Length: 380
Length: 244
Image (cartoon, rainbow over all chains, first blue to last red; front, side):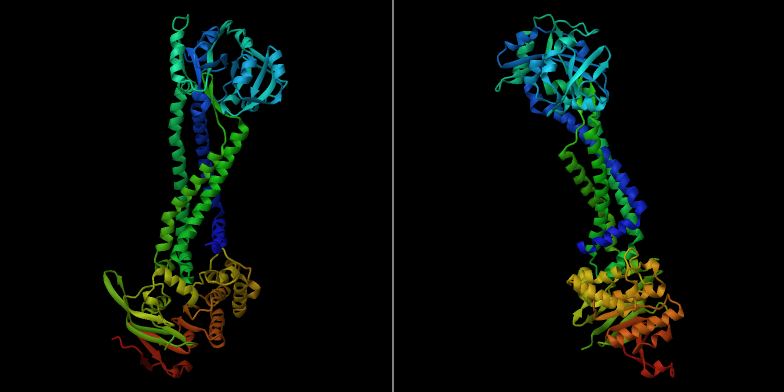
């Protein structure tokens, strides 16, 4: 097989225009496939990682957008008295857009000390001390900083908010990198929010052996007599519910991914069939010289595989590059899904390309290997 | 024992609802070093016989044994292996691989054999030298004349040191001058390298370069006597086969 590699590569190179068009088509399709995969991975991470399962979100009952949830800050004290609760962090949320958007900006206001212990944020520039000491200080997630071209020392204004960027952070939770954190009071006293003594939600961290669902019920029961009724859910369930419209859309996008795979399959199969029909006589000559039919089959499969892998590699690489450097995210109602590259995505992209390449080559390869030699030699 | 032994070979085709038999119970022996030409009108089965000897077509009945191997019993895959090691094929239209250079075209059959790269290179260089194309090794088919292409085709046919070389109208698509050069080359290969050649041609002049001249007619194979080769007699035919 490998002795005929030169022949295979030269055969592909011979039809450069056709090869380039096929590879380009496959690359675009695999680019879309990887992007869809990235959104799905982002949603999966958001709703099923340990943090999403072991953290509870207390929100105002029957409210969805963060601007409409107004819970007393004092609820934190009452929640922390419930057995199994380790820590409660009041969070004020502000977003520039409650609807689904690709450029959503979400501020979370929380006590700076608590923020450092509750979230695993790593400052890549700036300092925690300045964040704690300055009232309008903000630390900005890496993705938002990339998207909005922000760096430490910049002034950032949006709507009625005007903050000083004192740090850029990264996090092992990709969605965190789409947030901007400020002190709690800063957001509570922001013009337009008028939320002194109120917060959007309480984030509840549990002790090691506590049952999240049981404690969620206890919290809602304990606060039933309070001025505002609550709904408490696991963070993952809360985010899924908040993003329900997007979740449906992302579920539908799944089919777009399959369509892309089908597109590559059809494209490469068509190209390979055309290439084989053009060279039906050439393959017969090879067999007359002594090339086994099985080897002719493998030659055609190799051509199809190379085309598909070249397109798949290009598309996957382009998608991963944009996902790495683009800082892209989609969000709604204060919750964001990060588009992030991953080794898994790269492997899936290449594996799908390889499988599609082999599948696309099977019919033309069979045709090349099984056409009677004498019939093929009579072709003009 | 002959190098090629053909016994009771028959082949039929369906054409327009009618079954025709270009070959009927053909018997033929070809000795090592023979240069056999097969002549006959169109449709008499010359190329069919060549294809059957090459193992690229299957007979309806009969056997072909080449150097002790009954090729008519081999599977498609085994036949390919057998051809790689034992048979060279010269096409009328050269049929070189257009994306490969002359060197790479000639090298192709050697890639199918268990040879070292040094031995492969040596054989390819010798084959190109034998056909007088050493200086065109890196030329692509589109950069060569029809005659040069055919010489590359001949080098490709002999490079694996086959037991038999078959040639299907090797001068059929060439002008007179180039055709003469190819005829001389084939004669040289037969005489100097002792290559056994079976050549199909419809040109009686070309057929005279062969040491044995056969005529296929009505499913039978006839051999002209040796005097015919000097052009003094054109009517004396000897039937070799039992067939009809």
